[in-house]
Length: 145
Image 1 (tube, rainbow, N blue to C red):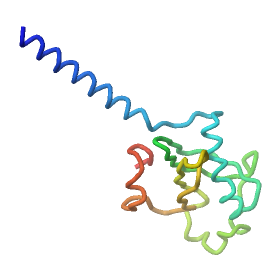
Image 2 (image 1 turned 90 degrees about the horizontal axis):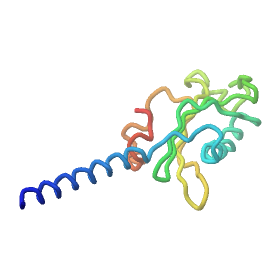
Image 3 (image 1 turned 45 degrees about the horizontal axis):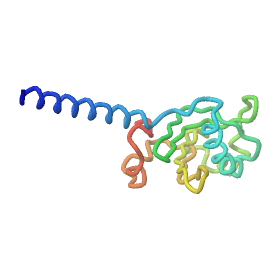
């Protein structure tokens, strides 16, 4: 009888622990196309990009994850309808030879009822967030590597 009670407690604990692991693994997600969350994240990035390359800008999303009040995105900016942005006509003109195009990475934080841009890099040639203490705060699975 005592063994059965111990087995029940053990199995119940194991199930609760597994359920908790599953729930925490699902907290980082990719906001689906057409959702308000995805639109709000991209709209929070748009002023920064338009100030550097000129308006209007739309984004092709290469990577987007959100969770625990953080979002990390990798986008390729373009003109509406797919038009290319001419780097020589942007604030990046003098740096174009040292950039990997306009591929943009951004870290955002949801605070004060809106998404806020915390960090961004345009055209990096390395995995800039590796080893940065800021990125040690973000949940696992938010960044691609």
